[in-house]
Length: 259
Image (tube, rainbow, N blue to C red):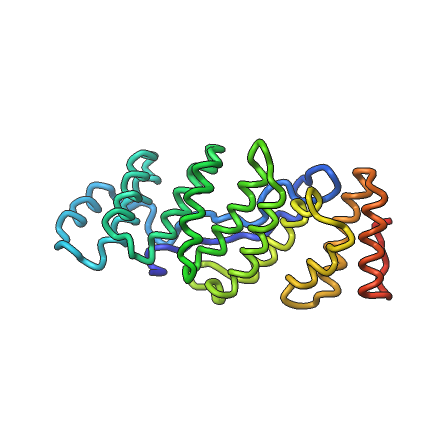
């Protein structure tokens, strides 16, 4: 499948403008760039002919349909891309490419700020529990909940946690461009924004330390510095103090440098 679909991921923009309050991320720190494992210059007509020549039930049909959808996208025909992807789902519902298609369609609607449609499609991708894209879908769901007009930090936080928990199951290697560690790191960083909105400062240290896969003290402290700085910037002194108390109780030698 890696010859057909290669979804790449990128880490956070370290120097990107931060959102108020503090230094909490405003945009997703990990995004799928493209399905770049196929030749973007493939000819739509040639692919159509190749598809028509296949016998019924040909195992290569789903991959060919996805190549055709990408060719339509590169040709600027968004409608044909969507219809080809929907055809793949209709005609080959058990293909391993189906969850990839749901995420790609979700990206399409999310790009148009139609978060309701995007959420439905990403949710379908999460139902493929053994898929490499299930964790990514949870991550993108989290950002939808942060970006909708009536932002829901609780649901966003829950989805970031699901992405972290799911990532090692399907993204344990860099197959198809996915790397579990990058998705986990992005989710850990981005959930801080949701936690600022809905979480309890006194519980953040225990919550975060449970999620980090390694070097819990250092990584939790770094997260506390960002979150604590956000509380200070917002004038939430009580929250900042509660966070500091939790951190120094867990690791007495730690310094609350944001205060």
